[in-house]
Image (spheres, helix red, strand yellow):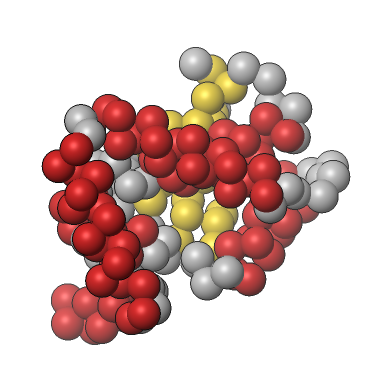
Length: 151
């Protein structure tokens, strides 16, 4: 995809009415909190989001992916693909609005929101002590790869 096309679609990921507010908030957060503290804050916010948006009981990985996707698509937050890998579960979240909303300077901490959401959803799904962690930086379309694996 051409960069100008990716930028156009990226800008549509966050409502104009919120973009200025969220960018100002992100700038203030960045000036007041260390990166690790921002990541911890975003993980907690993600967990709260997941608690407010619980998944139904799911018996298969496909059912889990569909349930997660319904929540994300219903809120214009992209979608997710889950893939079993040896020793881990790949979580590919497509078209997240986080970077568009909080600005390009937030790439080091804003994706922790997704870590918190998925961690809480997997906790609700009895994933035990497995841990969700981000394994790729967001791309131009806001897609981020995470993994669920042993801590």
